[in-house]
Length: 179
Image 1 (cartoon, rainbow, N blue to C red):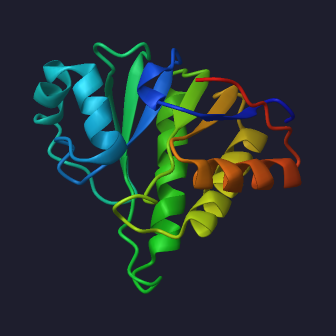
Image 2 (cartoon, rainbow, N blue to C red; image 1 turned 45 degrees about the vertical axis):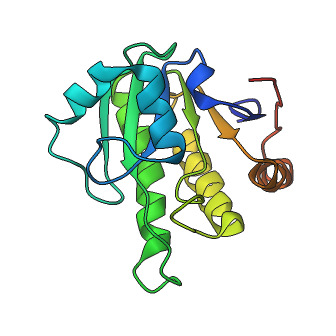
């Protein structure tokens, strides 16, 4: 399991990987944060394809080509808005990771990059979100050969520090690399 989880701080849209995960909204039509950055970098073709998908429910995931990005695919998943833990947010966030990883495996994505889902404008507590992310990815990798590597891509220093502590405290060895 060592070396199957990596950690970087940087811009997920710049990575040359099989799939990047988009922390999307339910419309899949772009928004702020990582969602807006991915839509801008992928180009207008992404919006055109997303308009045909009929949106996406919270916790679910859908896949598209990545168009102008260096990645092959974009896996769009909708994280929950934090409502003080009263609306099953923890399970919905766990589902984001499970469903995204399942789509990655089905599309033979060997290297997948994840942003920090729901920790921006959706206000999910960063520590709790990171624990859920590391747990779900660890469980999936223990049972599956694909993806071979999952990269946590942290845009901000807070998330980077949280993930670094969790990964080093887990059975994994964090490999930090420049984005």
